[in-house]
Image (cartoon, rainbow, N blue to C red; front, top):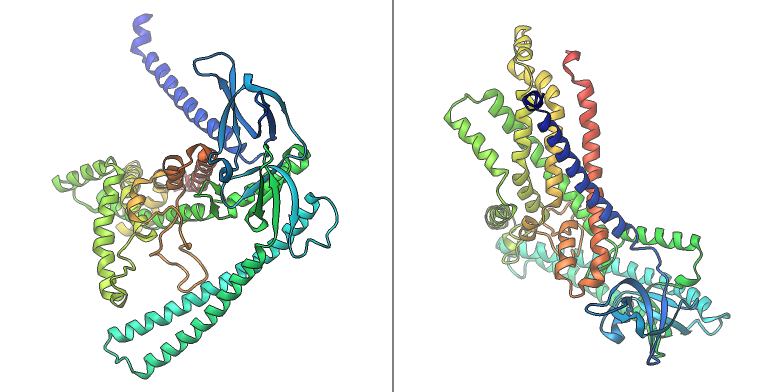
Length: 532
């Protein structure tokens, strides 16, 4: 019985089942940890006010508790915010040093553009239109914040006009440099006309800039006077306040609406506070666009290479060496691809493009510097071996009788390939593409060399001609995680955003992979052997 048990391979069956179980548990644990730490970040936590034994007071969110290192009892970590007053965001306090702990309903939280949250109480609100307002300071704060939000929107509209004017001035300047580069004389009529148009635009630009500065100065007159737990007063411009809320007085419905507004800001807003607060739209957009551009290169290149190796290349030493090279390329560290992309694409092709097409802009590079195009091509080279191997395996799994039957019926080799073999191999090809997309989405090292930045001034795709700007730098969720987790000057405060960004990256990979899996399953149902 024992010999039969081992001879039939039962231990291997149980071993593979155990390995699969462990793998699933590891993956589930990872997802659960990310979900638990990421989904609860934006829920409005209650604000506690602690009176210490010495009479001083501390106000903030209780983030966590732990045993006192090397002692008895426990200690609490308070997120006290008010970085402009205290110079730090968190403070550990021994529970034994707390005389009383309560949650005052009037505790106010102000999310600000900088210096972190402010925890305290509202004393007064002032501004040019505040004299005629009735009610308590909280209601007047809400009213004046609506006014400042409208005026901030007007300032942003002027900013958009300034951006458009600046783009037009740059375009005229570029045309002028092109004419000079092509040998035009400085006093040529065309140059004079361009110079006059640029001067007129600069005059309008200066007027709009002065109007924007005046609008911003008027906006700064709207202020809120607040006090921290110890009574220290501070005047904060309403324009610097992103949100004002009292979490201890909020109902459950208000908390849900607050949570949804934070999610909206995360998906559609711009980052702030060194990327530790605000939204992630530029990083989300950059990640998706990078994967899309990479796929446009990887898919056809990998499939054509695999088709040639499997269907057209004559078996021999050269083909075997190529297959070995392709398999080895899949295991090369990604940073090596980044160095290659920097040398070949940026310093090689990009610099050559600048010399031929943008010589008038030199020494300022256009394509001779990092950008989303070169990053996409670098990732395409990194992932194309995966597509080649998967496509070759899919083509090799098709029985030889299918090829022979198609050729016997009078089809050419090309017709057999396009109408029979590739459709039948499409599920396997899609599997390789899914693996390539998943790997590319998480790569960071090559991007750090070929175009990713901490904060991109503009998106690669916008409303300005030529609309798609492949030379622009971009943001990426993977690099965002690295930046705020390891490069942030305030890593403790950035920790929640690390989990949120990780969750978003996982969801994007799962979403794009799910779409590809659905397409693969449809192809599998349509192109089965039984349908031919």
